[in-house]
Amino acid sequence: MDKRHAAGLAVAGGIAVFLIKAVAFGISGSVALLSDALESIVNIAASIMMLVSVHIALKPADENHKYGHYKAENISCFIEGVLVLIAAVLIFWEAAQRLLSPIEPSNLNYAIVVSLIATAINGIMALVLLRTSRASGSIALEGDAKHLFSDVVSSGGVVLGLAIASVTGLMILDPLIAMVVAVLLVKMAYDILKKTAQELMDCNCPDEEKIIDDVLSGINGYIEYHDLKTRRTGNTIYAEFHLCVDGKCTLAEAHHLTDIIEEKLKNSIPGLSVMIHVETEEEIVHPLHSQ
Image 1: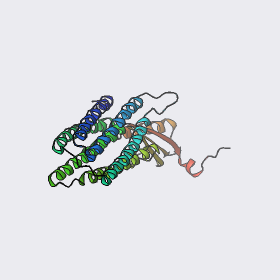
Image 2: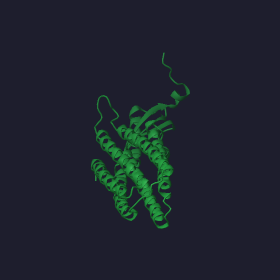
Image 3: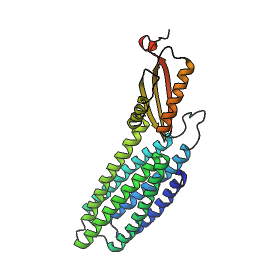
Image 4: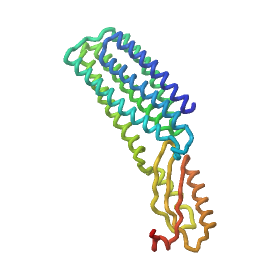
């Protein structure tokens, strides 16, 4: 399944899950199930943004975006994190109100069964999105998959808590569970925002830098390399570094050497775009200064 089909599936599945969870809340009046339904609204909005961002990211580079449109996925993921945070605040507020003015849920057994159906659908969608994100390198699909997995965990906690409340009669568990869900959402929002902010700020790629170091250490014909820089945009890794060669090396020999290095690096790091600046040891000792 490609990225666009997976994103479309996430939107359709999100709408179905929300409707099912809304039925569960309507049956019971449980604020914990309401919090679960509100989270599904966030899922729908996030999935729609993801679908749009995936379409934009797949556009080829143009005159105004010579590095492509991959950052659209990062922007979508960042907005998703903000939406999750807003949902957490709304859920916590509603739960606090219910603590002050308790309302005993009804028909919890039926509502729990309905909620479990929605949770199962979310779990299946999360697995599909995660598998597709790993195959395509899409941060937007990965963010949505992790979001849905968190939803599965929080929904499972809601169902378990309500089952305990139904058996023991401790209905105060209803708003307390909703508050726990809100806290979990805050943690999830933090993780999403942290990762996408790092990519938007062009954070370096330590794993790929280690691979570059290992590849270069196995190649002869140069003196040393320095100023290695890396960054990630979508599923592309951009790398550049300075390669110091012997001053007696001809232009053709230097060009052949960089071709060998580029080929080995690209074979080791899929999606790599590398730029190598060739210089001699004389340039390092006596750097040229512009007048």
